[in-house]
Length: 84
Image (cartoon, rainbow, N blue to C red; front, side, top):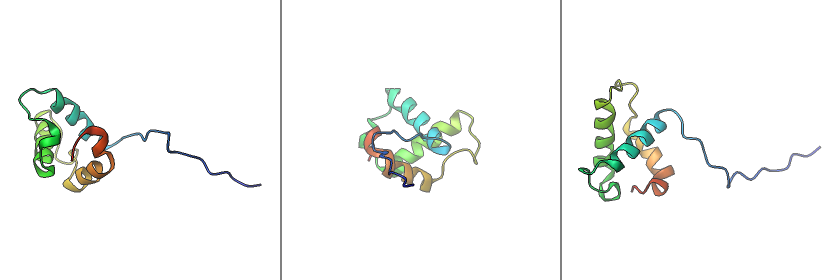
């Protein structure tokens, strides 16, 4: 019996855990008229805004994503969310 390879290219990956918190913050920041377009912000500035947004909405320190998690998210999903 042989196992045929499955093509996952058409499947969208599920974003869970702390990366889901980043998506939550990005969607909210995108709707805020006082924030410049997210594509114009440098990665450090965007991480700071995401962290401040999550802190303001009651996320504990351990629930907020670290900078390395944010960088992984940015490299993996950055083009899909229009961030650099």
